[in-house]
Length: 72
Image (cartoon, rainbow, N blue to C red):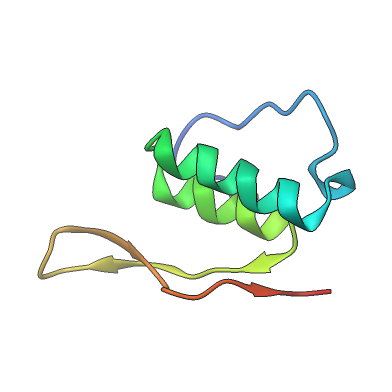
């Protein structure tokens, strides 16, 4: 079973029930909170977005794909 690199994110609500505007606002809050990039990508997937994260060997840190595309 695959797991995220850090502690599981506990959500007190169903993120899929949020409107598109609320989903983007929630992702912005997570981004500004400087959470683990892999947790951020997992949350973006749960909200219906395609977002990639890869390890950048030159920078020595994970990098995110620059675009968000909705799945539905």
